[in-house]
Length: 140
Image 1 (spheres, rainbow, N blue to C red):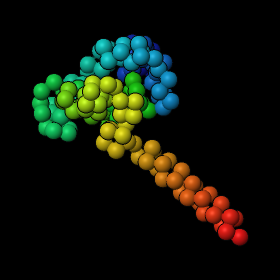
Image 2 (cartoon, one colour; image 1 turned 90 degrees about the vertical axis):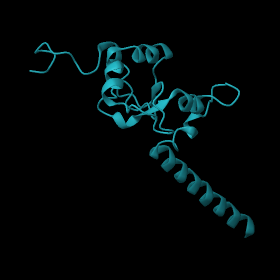
Image 3 (tube, rainbow, N blue to C red; image 1 turned 30 degrees about the vertical axis):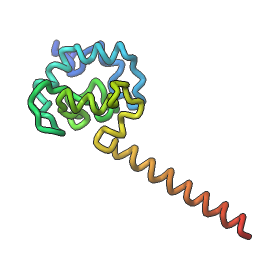
Image 4 (cartoon, one colour; image 1 turned 45 degrees about the vertical axis):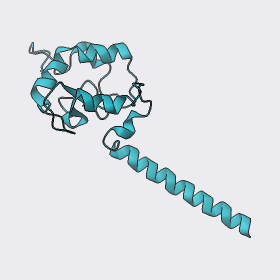
């Protein structure tokens, strides 16, 4: 008998269930906003976020910042995916000095994810190998 048969509420709210476990981030802006207004997110912020900014130490206006959306909607099981930031540091990640939203904000996200870095190294090594092969063919 699972938790729903016993009459218990699921850890993940039904409206969020469709966008959980989605590493491709294929959720709409409306779904994202609904999640941030949900009881689940309020409980997550209360129970899991640090009461201070993890960048500057401020305790004023703390936001939850998703470092990755691989477990979006399932943050309680993956609290390491979200960091506590004050509004000033959070805005510095998402907006440039002119107030324009960054398209490449992940580079300001504490170095990106390990997976992104690993893929970049692999791509660079492949390009280096291909360049060497082409150079060898041209020299001979």
